[in-house]
Length: 605
Ligand code: G6P
Image 1 (cartoon, rainbow, N blue to C red):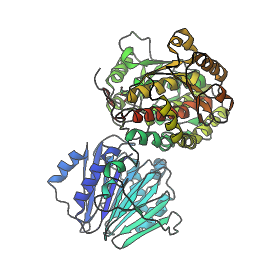
Image 2 (image 1 turned 90 degrees about the vertical axis):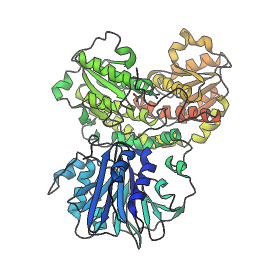
Image 3 (image 1 turned 30 degrees about the horizontal axis):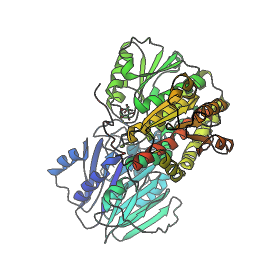
Image 4 (image 1 turned 60 degrees about the vertical axis):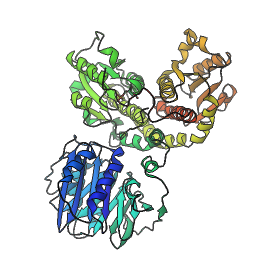
């Protein structure tokens, strides 16, 4: 996720762009840049760090002009450096800002006639690709080049030969166009334009807009004219940043279908029924030498890791251990060169996990990162690994990073599995199931209102237990963690089978139980666990497979989720629990995005 701003009109563009960048900083904040076109020349200033740092650099410089583009970056390709920051400029003539991931950038790069690239980014390749198509008509250049682009983009292009025109295009990454008096604003969301205009049109996927002082013309990639409606926006600044949601956590829960696609995009080899994760950076014989997997994590990442363990063992027959990073480094763990240790972390800054991978390295393990924040300390120390592409996660309670961590772990398990254990048929079945996940996530999200009504019934309890078995045991842990983090209700996640060995003593009519009981191989066992708590008078909420009518006989409340392959169930089953925790916390008046005593990333031991 990155933030884009563009302006064309009669005002001085620089202050508008700088304000816009600040408004969009929540979308990414590792580097930023502006480019202004004036007198046949594009001037650009870029800086690593937050927008404030860019502002300082811009301060002394005068960049007059009425047309310009700007960008705040959340790195997906290439490290966090000034060279990698946007706007990217080709030959001093064409400037591009881009939000998204160009999946086939290597392929496009190979087709460049003059690939004098100065960055490691997919965006710079795209800029050159558009430049190569330019024959005097900027819209045509953008439209034609996009016909061969795979991936996602929200982009704005500016060219010295067209000092009164900006061209914008969208596929997958949002772009809004604000319409003022003889002026236009373009941005990733409406926040930067709200002080100037409330008249906005939203680009849809596959649309290319030509924006100039005289008007706005939108075509699709087949060059057919599209008539758009203009919407009057009545959001305030803050609501707009949250995409109209009440807070970041809810927005991030609803982001999941889209960012899940980012996690798997370009990483499936459909021919071979496997996954390709370049970041592992090990030769085939080195990969074959890996005999054990170790996952080091904390909090929500730990729960994602437990789901990964299941997948590594089942698909790849690899013994997999998972440990709290904070515990690992103070034990005397048995690891060696045949151990592949994954550091699993959203922020890439968790001190415990950082120390743990240092220890693992010292003991000879191969260390790789599975991280969200590009260029973070753990990502750098791990040296290689895979980014989960969840985009900035601002709410303290992790949601979309969890599902994307699970996605990447599943891809790794598939890749390792296909090396030795898993058949091509199973691989293809799993790929198909993965591709269906976003749509199924959307189906779960459609139940938001229903879940809110159910949450109302549980908000007054002081203790709630969550139970699950097999793949859904980590889901129970995560459901309980979400609830405690943001509602302050005491909750515990338990393995269904472990109930009778102690925790059952807690169960009474005052302690409700949330049971994850989808129709997998442990369905009957899980139903028995539900009976055990029912018999002790507990109210039971069941997460069940769509179409399971029978479950209503033992459940007080049911939330249905679509069916999927068993290993993938956590990707769907966790979402109703995130919403359940969210609605209880809201009903109790909690500060959902910033719960007491917690921090988004804990950089102390
Ligand atoms: C903190 C946060 C948790 C998070 C954990 C691990 O405890 O409050 O929400 O799951 O750190 O964070 P990481 O950034 O390493 O995934």
